[in-house]
Image 1 (tube, one colour):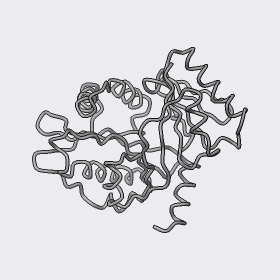
Image 2 (tube, one colour; image 1 turned 30 degrees about the vertical axis):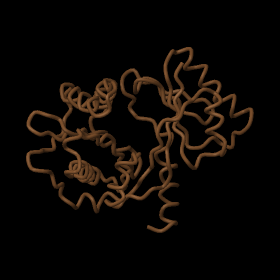
Image 3 (cartoon, one colour; image 1 turned 90 degrees about the horizontal axis):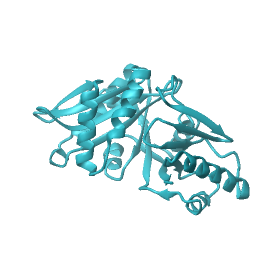
Image 4 (cartoon, helix red, strand yellow; image 1 turned 90 degrees about the vertical axis):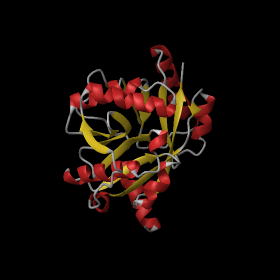
Length: 265
């Protein structure tokens, strides 16, 4: 793609996906606004802060906005993630977040590409593996157990979060597992963002013995087909350093980066 294409994709991403709020809201989820910030509480194990842009805030006014979020979540006793993008302004925003007590987690790359070419390719699943769409809590618990084995950390919040989303609007999300016999070896989900051109892809963690067999690619192409069936034309992923090369080979292009800045009381 050309530089102009990348610029257009980033602009579309900013306009359509950033500051987007689920509608209807899952049970127990609340949304608050503080100036340009959208504050989402109850969707995951902590809070989430997002925005389309900061409206030119800088200096003491920006520091005051950040300080209000710290105080709010300190009172709640919850952690909160500020989703920072590489093209956000002002340029010293990362320094201001760190000064307020936010800590950066590993950077990911936002990649975007057309859904149709991937949807046209049938998923090539390794022998002995099958892909299956799931909604039951028992299957969500199996996904969390697989993720915990991959990352060696608690993933129980996935069960609650995905279950809430499915209950609120079962047509807005599809969860897909890759199974070998009775074992979940990988999983991913796709969200069909209403009122946009986008389907967003999440998950993709795979147990170590099953990597480099094409399972991740098969999950991507399967979900691309689901996206096209729902009239979504673009796929978007927050890609780790491991998944980014695969996604680029599949036709998605980097448009910016994203780094979670997390404040923990």
